[in-house]
Amino acid sequence: MKTFRKPTIKATVNYDPALLKSNHIYLAATDNEKIYVDDLFQQMPLYVRTYLLLHEEGHIIADHPHKRDLSQELEADSYAIKKMNRFLVHKAMLHVMSVFMKIDWTVAAEYMVRLSDLGYSKAKTMYIIAPNGLRFNVETIRQYL
Image (cartoon, rainbow, N blue to C red; front, side, top):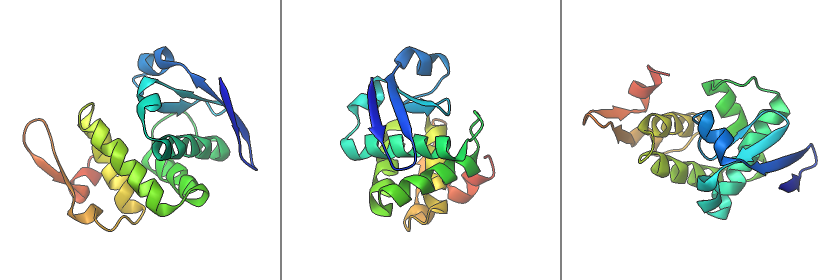
C-alpha cells in the first residue's frame, strides 16, 4: 500500500488486480476514497503512472459517480493537466491508447476523442482500425460515445 499527498487530498493507492479485473477495468480506478491499480499499471512508465494517479485523483476531487462518462473523464484529464502538464498528459494518454489497441480498441478510441477534446493538435488526423478492418476517426467515434 502506498500513499501520495497533494495539497487537496490524501489518497491511498491499493494494488488489487482482482478487484479491477472483476469489474472489467484495466490500469487504475477509484471508489472516490481509494485508488486501485493492477499489474498493467505497474508496468507503465513513471509519467504514465503519474498521469493515471492524477486522473483518478481528479475523479475523487470532483466526487464523480461510479460510471464512465466522457465529460467526467475529460474533467479528470483536465485535473491531471493542471497538476502535471499538457505535454506529458497527452504523451501518457497516447501511451495508454497504444496499449489498449492490443486489449480493447474501443477504450483506445475513447482516448482518441478525449485527446481531441483536450486540444491535442494531431488528434483530428488520427484514426483507429477496428478488428473488422474499418477505420474510425475522432468524429466517427464521437457518434458512438
